[in-house]
Length: 308
Image (cartoon, rainbow, N blue to C red; front, side, top):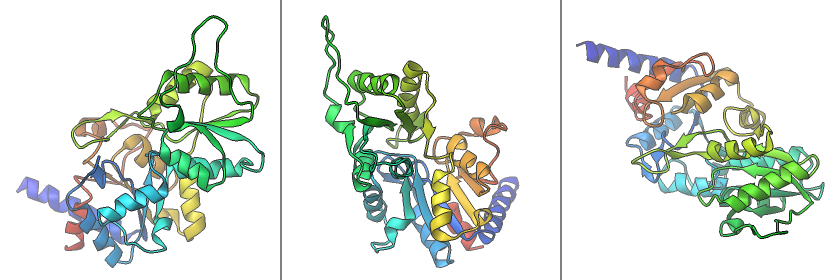
């Protein structure tokens, strides 16, 4: 009886939350899928919210794919329709990095970007017309260590962008630190600070924050963060869709990015326990992240509340 009562209370909280918002922003990894495995019931939950007239957005700190790449994955799992408007629902930290650089005068300043990251960042920079070096192109390179040898750095590099890089190597780290330590006014941009992520459905993997920290350590420079929990992406949503932040709910699995993103930017929040956060982590949550408004096991619970 006690368990049933607790479940009923959770469903009531979800129902109240849903009725008080006009839009939902969903994180992806650990919320909609783990690796390439969809989370049971998530598709049905989003479909139910759409039927209720809620606006849906997907914001991910994962920069390994472009928005087009994430849209393809979302569509393959049935989360969004194949329409001309679907791309407007999808935002990523790779997109945020390119959009931020546009505000800094790229590409009109004729500067290039060095990338520690994958094809998602390279594609978004290309879409924005910003020339880029590094990324997958440098994955097999080894710096020379002989007497009198070194790595030549392109002096036209005006920024280094760092995201998740599953082909990270010493050459990339060395090139990036040379850019930041030797080129005047070179900017350090990080897609996100995530320490761990769900790259597969069976275990946690090092996140982009690990590579960001390595470059921070050897440059003694703090990066400009453009993904969650910073406000760059929510400002884009508010500007493009004329929404009230108090009537938006951020749905995520992380306290340090998703819930902090909501709390910093005046959004409501729903924490799902299908990803990184464990009950022990939640119980220790302090003022540095704040508490979520509502906690539930999975996005699938949004279907159950819609039937109450």
